[in-house]
Image (cartoon, rainbow, N blue to C red; front, side, top):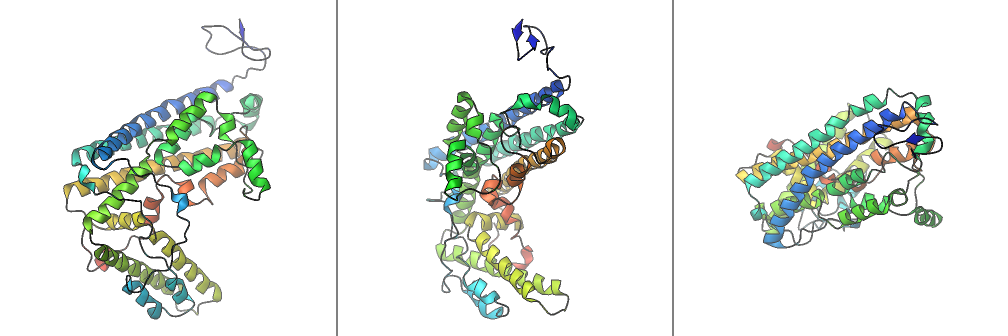
Length: 413
């Protein structure tokens, strides 16, 4: 018989190794993770078909789909100009108390950040969008199938898990090649690139003062040559983030081809959000005198609004959510965008299910891949949006949606 580890025997045809340190409960752990990988493959199958078809369609009409690099948008946009965004600028005198005026004065131009050379959505058709929407919903459903798997894993006690945990080193729960491919396909290039640094590179970065205090395992060091090759190939391919950001930029130039008209729409939208934030702040005070802390929180909220609205895609996504499109293709785009958000949400929900399982099994000790609870928490919180989400503009847009009836003068999408 072949040896499957010290004192463990396995022969072809045997379902599992036997003898030695082999644990009865290890079979459950392996089977559940095999189940994860089966459904991860279905997720990728559906999403890959959407990305391939959309890339071919866009390329035939406009060339290569622009790559979205959100890390390059560093919040260094200059303050908006009064002549281009008069309504937003008027808010400075309208809300002159508590330092809010300065926060508004230094807000960047709404829609400042956008992809290079945005292309109209004329290459799209409703039939393709409907098919892609269906496939993304199926991919989300496939991912949802795996969430109850954590309930099965939770039948393991920490002591049972520790019987075989030592043999998992240096594997990691987040070391699945397919899971990394899923992240990449959604658009999280920067996040995966960060994790693909070798342990030596991370130590060098830490020595230079560039690393945070969360223990981050090196995916590069955990993967085989085959796995690293797959990740490198994925890094070169278009992502769902590339597609969604291209669509939202295309909608902007298609609905408002004139730059002055587009600035006017964004100007009114920004002013409405500022007014709403200040109004909600006053309501929350409930007639009591505001404290220094209250004023500070409002200023921070206005600054955060400015950051969100500096991304053109976030504004367009919010407007698309607020209004019912008239054109059939745009109606289908809205449904497609909703399916994209649902897919991103499903990956986030998976992470949130994984986190308490790890905490229940190993507490705060380091993980088998070199990470641990602190690292896992950093993957679902306290990270820049482009590292935590595949489609950050769709999540950010939820903070900007206003009552459509309050947006007078808007051209309906």
